[in-house]
Amino acid sequence: MQLDLPSQTDIYLLDQIMRGRLRANMRLLDAGCGQGRNSAIFIQKNIEIYGIDKSEQAIASLRRKCREWNPQYPPERFTVADLSALPFPDNHFDFVVCSAVLHFAENRNQFVQWFEEMVRTLRPGGIFWFRMTTKHTIEPYCRHIQDDVFALPDGTTRYLLDRAVLRDLMAENGLTFLDPFKTVNVNDIRTMATVVLRKNGG
Image 1 (spheres, rainbow, N blue to C red):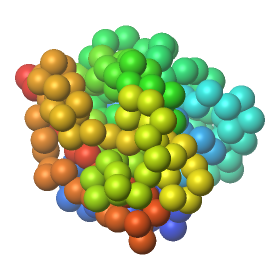
Image 2: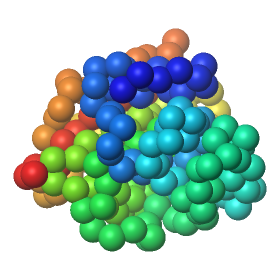
Image 3: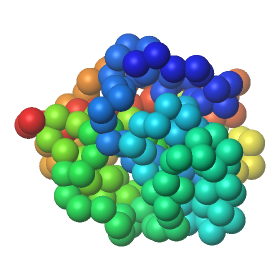
């Protein structure tokens, strides 16, 4: 798939594009799409992508931008919704993108609910790509609040991904690693994980 690459697109998502894992005939979901940072590239190339965000302002802004990026693209594909109840059927998407959203879960139960709801909409053989904060290398610098929620050195509060919790969720939901678990420590302020999973079957 040949694409002009907007500068705002997450570089780790671009990696998936450059490796041929996102194709023109796929149906995509951008879960927590905001104002379209990672949706723009697909809108411009008329690739079928849907987006949800809990912010009405963000969705209104994205719909306006959608008309600028591609006047023929249906802006109603982007809608206000919550990760806990996605307005899509089971096994609907080929690829689910969730960039820097899951770490806003308030507790482990909410994290699991969001995670499993996205997996529900993914078809067997589909790919679940997400980035979020993780405990890896950063936990000693954080203050524990509850569950896997911590106060980070930068003053923010985040849900931090735990490898054991992830392994359990993968086993329970029929997921396997498509890429190795990758982390980047940002100056001992936070650590971001990039996770690429495939839903078994298909």
